[in-house]
Amino acid sequence: MTTSNLFSEKSKTKSPLFIFSISQWNACSLCDYSKIDFVRSINSHIVAIQEIRNHQDMLDSCGYCFDFSLRTNQIGGGTSTFESQHKSIQILQRITVNKDTNLLKLCMNGNILWFSNVYLHDSEPKRVQKLFAKIQKFVPDNELSQILLIGDFNIDILKESEK
Image (cartoon, rainbow, N blue to C red; front, side, top):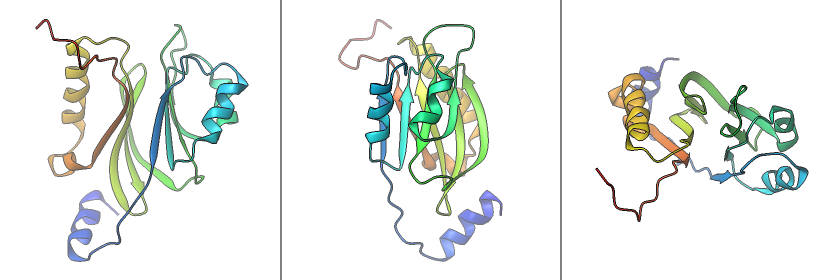
């Protein structure tokens, strides 16, 4: 079924309310079992972790990881996204946004959602602008209301911008 078919079918019939929970955490390296235990204890449908660093070997211990990005030749960064109900999320499309972030088109319980577990390593405005430029490039106009961004943007909202 295409996205346009899903949207047109949804407008014809009222679907039941779709509720899910999501949590996020910057792990500052997913390097030991106390952090793994913490991730496993989070009671959410989706768990988004940033700064996992280069610890792909630890991902399986956290649960079902349906998306991750690692910096293989550098330290720092990386994201991983887990779901509590194994394989209840269907990935329809995966777009690499930067070395730490993917933009995913998901189908959850028949609902379309564009989702991104974001990690931006510094607070330069151009990084946020590049993120939104990629989103605009790939997400159709009729699906812009279906975007969910979560993560660590490294932006101090209390700091006055120099620009």
